[in-house]
Image (cartoon, rainbow over all chains, first blue to last red; front, top):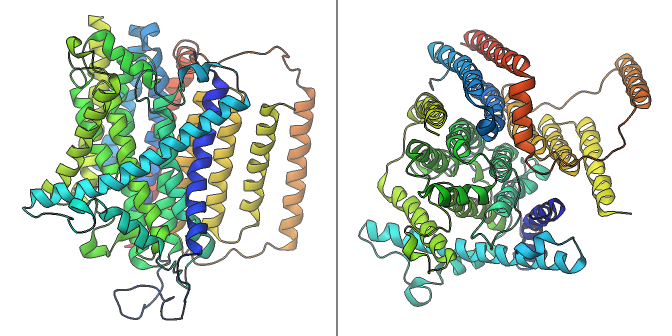
Length: 121
Length: 334
Length: 167
């Protein structure tokens, strides 16, 4: 049985290496790459023409609805995990409990469907 | 690895952990280099072209040359960009792609962290990448980049739900989130989860291709309309890290698919078990990688409205049906 | 000094540091990124407490979902503006509120009697949570699903109204 601490030490090493590689590569690259900036090079790319207007614009609300739906379904999915893991030890009662849960979830989905928020216009 | 994981931590075990993680990192970098070469070759052949064949024998050094070129490119930062976020966004996108590899078991002996919540760890960490993409698109202060970033994020979150739900069938049969337990369970029931969890497998495959932002779900990059998507303004090695993250995820997703649905290191038939497990793992893993490239060469890009309705109206209900069927079957058969 | 203590120290530093930066940044996107960093550090603290499942839930729900929802929310507003400095009165009120909260939290923590025995939850963390939820806390669990449904419907109604206004 692997030790808990060792597992997370490994995870930490992976996170550390994941940060180290880009930082090291970019620092090393600094000695190799040219650094010759001038105003034209620093303009925002817009297919070759002068950039017009603002790019930090207000987005349509439909994006936000997806984000909201995502958070809600994410939380619901999280509940499915311990249920699935412990299902062996819980039996039929847990199945019914989860059925109620999923039905409520589906009602929410149908509501969103009928309100046409799942549509991308 | 196993014997070191069970020992209390000392300087020696720490060095071994660190060295093996570095070895995996180098292996993954090598994989990415030749996966890109292989992808270009495969797509080339499928389109009756030759593919890269100039640099080195058979073009084998093509990607190496590409990486070296990127290393020598200037790191331009647009004046209007949000500088600090522009600089760290590729790193935010890359770190999770490598960190998820910590839980992938290659064989029952050769594995890294053996977490009790392995599968959920993978899904949780990989969800952070979305932040890197979105922040990179925003920080560029470029219209294409921001639209690409928003589309990408909307797509990734829409397909994350079916992805996370499609594996619940596997967990129901296994009763554990540990990836090694999941493979061992496939040995016990004598078949790979692709058979009892076929629906889950299909949902997982589609959702994972979409999570990887690969064709036919590569709308965020749709070069014909958005130039290149969220990384338009990136150049040189910062751009390289976005690309690297994408291909490291190809590695991770293929490995995860192999472990969850294709029996990991298990041989297809018992009499073939004299061949070491790692060979089986590599074979299945390569088959999944090839499948991803094959899909890219075959499928046209899907339309935005179809993309969203496929995720929410088809895959999500199907994933719920799959969970329900699995639970009922398990209740009344077992 | 044990490794666990060092890890706790670093993670607390990250958590508090992320929170402090979140307050002091002027651009909202920077705030959300530092908040996401705080969320991740808190997940690290849960790992130290041997609450693996809670830790990954923290990552998947807060860092992975709530932070992204906030970023999407920012995109919905005119987000090029920087936050203006708060007025003097607002600062005073905020200080009083924070001080009051600190005192309450402090005295509650002081007044609690802790169970000094050490428990280990590393084996089958998730199974235990599953068993507890689906045997002891069935009613709260079902109420949660109703709450989520209400949240979903409410979110759709609000967003729909917003959409109609903008058209």
